[in-house]
Image 1 (cartoon, rainbow, N blue to C red):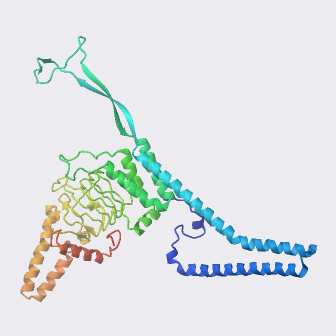
Image 2: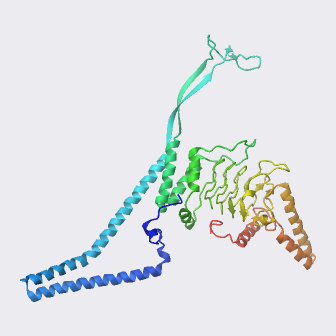
Image 3: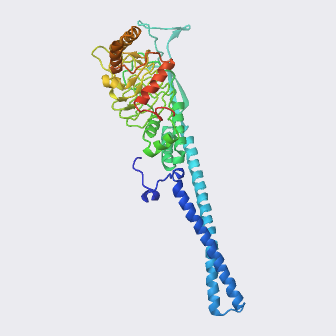
Length: 449
């Protein structure tokens, strides 16, 4: 998808989506020359008409062959000058009709693809229910207390067989629809955002998260994702740079909120600015994906991997990473393996993350006083609280030299940027805004502004 064929306009050095609002000077020049051309065309037409009239008046209606040839040529010239604007107008109207027909065709393609997303097929199923021996309504049991099967004289077990039909998703048709929508999004940039909304809605409707309570017991293997669900994730994640630019101009965010995409493969995908609010993402793989400005509010991220993921300005507010429970020698591969810069951990539960990063990395994170940390990390954060208390005491005692020294220690502490207030305190939000400004992470997708 990244290697698109260049169009004629691109070959000539123009953009497909030419922004006329940013080229008003060029538009003024073109408008001026177009006006001059129209005036010149009108003057030529009038001049030719006058020449014909003068020739007829001078020679009468019985014109010699030589003069007749001149008049005929002048007439052709007049017809050409008068007919040129109508020819241009007709071409414009024809092009508009072609555009309307093309858009109608694209609309039909979208409608057909959307119908395919709900495709189902009927499969025949067989249900076998074994019979058991009983005496006067009381089940007979063996020495181990198990029910005794009813058998035929030849020793074969007796079973009740029920044939029934069941509707299941037609994965083949749905896959075709998903890839068809991807092609439409490439062919028609104006419909790209609409296609992304359709695919996101498909994921939300087909994978709703029942809850974000961690699995108990802990899962022993990565959850399996249905093939059509994974296809939709892959299509969304491989959007081109041009498509992402369209989204950013419209401040559009992928909405994958309240989905259960546990085990999903998001690797190498473009998910910057996406919303995973309340999503269940146990065992999901975000390795090497772009998650800049992505919002994981209240998401369950246990066992999710973020190796080399771009975590610039990523929001993990109220997210949960509390499994697996690690020992002193244990290690959990999670957000600590991503490229951390300006992440937000307000109110998050990171009790299973033994190590977030070195002090230089921690200085580029932001959290609140109710962010849950691994006990060793929490102990380090407690040092900051002690420094703050000492600073307040020094201020009350008006010990300026000691206060200045403590301020320097606080600002250089690994958790020095973290708020001493809880997540719902207005001061926490205000401090976070200043934190992001200091890192130059402002505007979309880091905020809605």
